[in-house]
Every structure is written in C-alpha cells, then in structure tokens.
Length: 143
Image: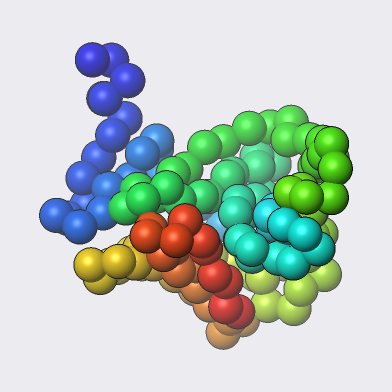
C-alpha cells in the first residue's frame, strides 16, 4: 500500500501518479522529447517529455487516463534500439523559443472520455499542450 501514497486523484476521469513537481515560477532549463517510430513512421510523437527545472530533469508521460511525473537528476538521452521496426528517437528542443529560458506559469489538466490533456503555460506566451489518446496509446504535442 505504500506505493499508493503518491497516487493522487485530480477528478473522476484522470489521475496523477507520482509527485507533481513544485516548478511553477521556475525557469525551464531544458526540453527533450522522446518519440516512438515504427517502420520509419512516427507513431507516438510525445511518448515522454523531459523538462529541466532547478537542475533536475522531470519526466512527464501518460498511460491510459493517468498522468505520470517522475524526477531524475541524471537522465540518459541515448535510446537503445535493436532494429528499425520499432525504435525510440530523441529530439533535443533546448533551443525552442518560448520554452527553455521561460518561467513556467501554470499546469492545467483536463480530460474527456477518451483524452487526457496537460497544458503547460510559459511566461513568453507559449503553451506546451500534450494530449494523450488512451484508446490509441498515443500522445500528441502542440506548442
């Protein structure tokens, strides 16, 4: 039962697993995106989003109707792949205007029957919106 202590329910249609980091008001120091590719086609554009605040990398990802937050000071960004049938690609987005170097102003979660959305708003006017389609196990990203 100890593992459930970090499992918080936000509303009836989605949950947050792990501790949501205390990063509101902090400047984003890094932005890395992990994608899944199958047969040379991107099938999951935002499988895992890595954001760095206050010297710590945070992983934001989804499964079903659950939003996961994890932290790690030493995240390795080298994917391990055995073939081209299905592989992970890493995008270094540290130079994306309006995210890295901007302060995080808010994180807003919402959901529908088939989607969970996390919208991260930054001080330079950009919003990073992640929409997870649970029935397809795919996360789309808009910025």
